Image 1 (cartoon, one colour):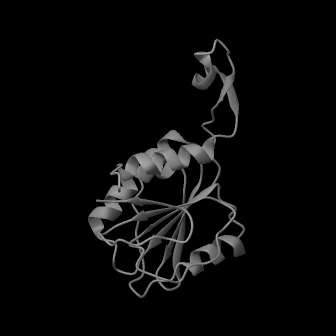
Image 2: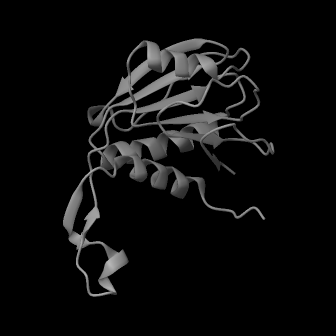
Length: 174
């Protein structure tokens, strides 16, 4: 079975999970209210750094990139954070940093070569970005993966290829 969940919902849920780092009494945890116990719930609008990696090998069409940019812009409106966008095909092609003052985001991908996922993860480590999470926009048409990192990874997949990644979660843009 392959349930169809909107990729925007998965992206939002993925980022919200990374942001959950503080407790609040309002609203109380819904898990225990039915038992008559009032406990704080996890809640935070503070996210920390997000790294967005974009596969610029030519497989990402303009419509998917615009749709993705709009969703990332809405996340930046909701969370006061810094987003590092890394463009990569077979090597790093560029790096831009965005915050709320840059809204709405207009991503400008650079590249057009082959695909290799390893340079992005090497770049993140080498430059000490320490992301709360990494979101990679790609078609997943590559077999060169790094070892799994210490932070959560979401692969936002374009196209209709039936492939999987060795780590992280996958959300498909249809």
